[in-house]
Length: 294
Ligand SMILES: [Zn+2]
Image (tube, rainbow, N blue to C red; front, side, top):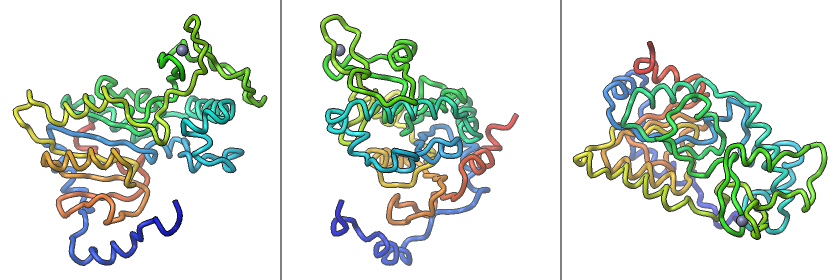
């Protein structure tokens, strides 16, 4: 993106800041609401796993600093240098494996477990929510999982043990093209790629349909969504923002918890919504305390 195409958000903020009341900062009113909430949609972003030491693409350190997302996280980048992309993915895999769920993952898992009508959409490719005990039948990885791999030729999807045997590699040695894992299907032999959703790719259709059906559940007698919980992201990322809008149209009050300062021009939060700025691992357990204690 060149500088001329980047919208000037600061102008929007000053133009609308006077007109629209800001989202509430009141922990009391949020707790009064969440304790009676019957139907909740949660959206989780990178800021949830950051306190566990998982960096975002842009925050990736070491040698990856000199590469950009086009090289590391697009189909074109993979085509150009599959070994480089695999090295990056294996490094992230190692980082995720050695990380532990934080207090926010645990609080969310508890909340989801107690509230049967609860759907979680995570943009994180790690498995920290699962390891925190989050109910997996109501957890969708919008951007896939780093522990899945798929074939670039026949679309075979592999996960679990099948993956670990194919991705054993000593990371102290650079990876060559011969080291890139290949499809185990007889006569396919296609290059295997990470099962994550890369930039320029879209969320799998069946998943989108499940989410759409939950939001518009006909068995729910047109029941509203009470709460849209947004954790660890405040950025304008499609389709995440579309889900926030969909929940809002169903009557949801939106609560955002994120390290970043609120940008009133992005999420369109209003008076009945909440914005809590800070470390999610500290804030979220406090916010959910009346529901999850005991
Ligand atoms: Zn294949």
